[in-house]
Length: 479
Image (cartoon, rainbow, N blue to C red; front, side, top):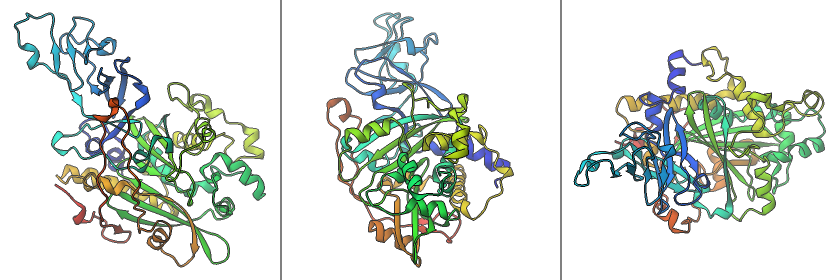
């Protein structure tokens, strides 16, 4: 369990909070690129970590993320005219560019230079992997974008969307990195293996280019043994279940600071899945969900499956609100629950959302009783709390200094029971914590070129194993 003070620190991300300051040291997704589909299109309201902002794409395709109030009389720039490389307030015509600079003040004398003294708050933006990212921290500390593999690949090899989650960001992340619950929440009631495999086709575990009995192994062993390794971008969380003969089935998750996670399902040749949780406020968040295949483009059929709710993707409406949500009790079917599925709720993403939301808008961690299968959750909390408290004490987050370290993979593997997690990762990926070097890709078209960051060549970086000092490895600190 956590103290009430630490629970508050973990969950609150508004401006001026310790965790909010920590989040603001990293680039955060704020919109999908397709939400601003063309130059001079209508602006979009954005709320992130309690801040109300406005996003717009100017005539040159650049994206601005600015405060929404005109400094003249406080009119809402959402109603403004977007054109000629700026957003113009319709009240008195004052105009601002993507950097927040005032371009025109037509209600003032032409000879006045007052516009040069006026600006609105604006955050730097980049487009990367079909996502618009913003940096909301100190300009002097602005890092590179994290080199997440889905964004490094051609668009044909990824599928990206988002969905609303109606609870605090941290408990949703914890649900995402908790692999023990798969033996229950996402499982079927019948014990027949054939029925279980058929039912699981909508889950990431259903993408079986490598045929094995992973569904049975998860169903039959509800108490995986956990091993956690800290590395320069976050945590490697391995959960080993009994397989056949003298083997273990490993499901390995990556948690990447501060709010990214890769699912533990993929074997070689299978689709990878990831999520990024972005607080809207302290009681809701957007989950950016993405699939990618390192070796080939997705087919039209695969893209249709993702859009209809497959793996981490939920079924959402045109506003990215899940069709199954808190208001309609996730359309739970009690007969389905009684006879077929453990939850009675359709969709892996919806099953996750229902149980995470059920913990309350902000989970009270002071009343928990944790056990051995919660090791990954404990390490996640410790890592995030140490990061936020360290920043308060003047220590910058070391992860922000190592964008290359984010190019990692998670996944599944079957190996002899005497293997440790680092050995399993080396056997599976050729690197002890899953480093990979994918082919980089520069998005095409002038609308994106000015906002795109291309990653540098990967470097060798140190790692820290579970069981070492509880403080962060000093060699990883920066600043």
